[in-house]
Length: 292
Image (spheres, rainbow, N blue to C red):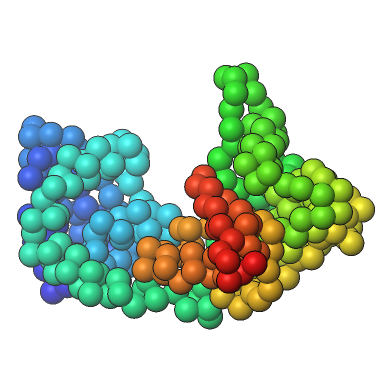
């Protein structure tokens, strides 16, 4: 019963081309017409995947493939993606697509609340992975955001060093400045800033235990333990005042609904006349007569 229902719905999605589906029961069904567009084959290995292909096909095709619950046949993944993209507009007009998208919009309010506990779980999901994984694609400074390439022949390491230098220049660091790094990651930026001027101290915070451990170890190895202070802390819980606040590649974790809270917190943490650099935007907070 489930297989017949799912196949009847999937058939409505295939307006151009043909999809040959092998179901969990071993049944093979052809959806669409071979001479009307691209052709692909898939094998669905369990009933739960069949159900989700109807309720959220825009996500389930990719996730089921990564999990091994759906495997392409002749033509491989490329032909399957060709078929899906050719028929992608059909999903948004189908009743299942409209219901799923509408339900997702209703839940978006709750997904974007991003309370401290949820923030920590989200960060752990992305960053509390093995050091060996990140070593395969990050530079020695462990910079997770894009580098700055002056020339096509620049290496990733060179581009990241150039980026660090540009950030330091925009912050206009002076001797003795106190710096707050929100979302410090593995501590590469904090280490670089601590070496730019005399007696610069940097407080870096992260919600990833693995990043924290790496940042502290790297600071010790660089002989900067007295200048660098890394903590497992949510930015909403930080207190005090800093001459400079910097946050690179952090806004995607904050979410648009929390921007006001985020920027208010940054403003409150800045000392009078301090400078904040958030991603690629420099924000100056001028001292008022009251602050003086």
